[in-house]
Image (tube, rainbow, N blue to C red; front, side):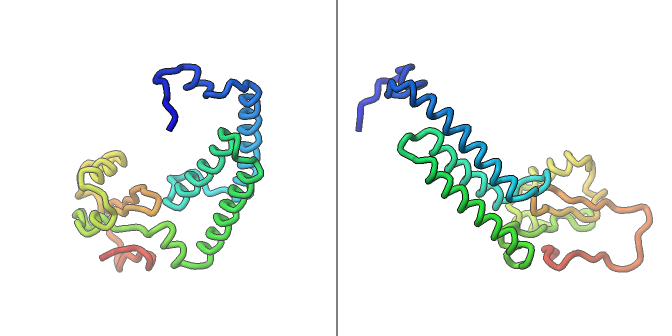
Length: 186
């Protein structure tokens, strides 16, 4: 292992190499990879302005890693980075199609809503399944303007990490409330 001189500002900011042309190459690499990634991300389609799912976060990490290496390391050819990014985008498109066609794949990748409150009472089982602390969930309710649990007929921890709230209405409707079959309502 090479000895490193601590706080060598030239090394920290410019690296050990004094090849200033390589700094221009880094600029070119950043612009190229950035434009290439934007073109492919547009190809992936719009997913809406909402919180990111676990699946989408993994996608961002994978793309970030593959683009970052090509931008900064001279021994990573741009072509290799383009191959990696193309494969990641293709896999993402395939998984998106599977999500549209298969409820099982969709639930595996994005999870399912979990009922946390029923008739104004917190369901400990729901908190445990969602891995959210009670005080954290109460904070989420406060952010939604809920002052008292008695206001809430149902609250769900949604697939996106948001809280879905149904307040008690002045008039109760006759009949049973129905929920989609893939919601945890135990």
